[in-house]
Length: 316
Image (cartoon, rainbow, N blue to C red):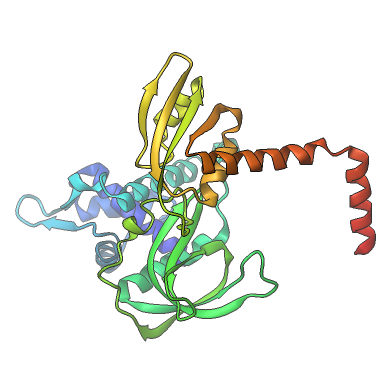
């Protein structure tokens, strides 16, 4: 139900945004023809309830012009594409609508699967809005069992098709990041919390690539990208601090100011031989160590690997 409500909000925002101005009758007719409407008109009370929720959740104001034709419009439409959440809303609808309205060719539209943790997104955002704590049962990959505890949800972030919530628990002195697809159960509590005025979600991740904040100090990192890999990085920067400080025919050098976290090294490994870390030397050496470890895995004879697999199987 929560996921369906989210789709309804996205549909309503996009319908009004694309129309510019639209009457309720026109909205209801389009709703009736859409996959969400299932042939039924949109009730007026439901429409107004959705308007309130959209404003509370996403700061998108759907207003009514009662003088020039009694139509609805988005008051802050010019700001929408500049907001991260608003842009995500429109992009989400574009994909969902394409799939829903193109059912006949659905098998020919391939997209990346998103873990089931997204079902918790709506209640988490609702708890953030209402300032109430969440009780979650959470299981890390390295824990044998799930642990249940309460968190005050500060913000949510998406990274590589996965959603994360930053929350403060009494178990730790500082906020922690929790992956939604590792939450097994979630319950909204009655316990209130006050969002700390000195916590800035963007600042929290400002020096990180991904969702790991880490304790490393941010440093100036320089990367050398070869051939068309430079075009890829230029089009899709790794980090907001990215600057292209040198451009040659066969390579470019990019500079960043960020923390060299686990997410950073994973991203560098995914670039293969297309990218080289030039500096600082400690970061370069740590990357070299990971590359040498990977090389050692592939230098072992296959017979040795088969023997290890057989031993492992017999031990079980």
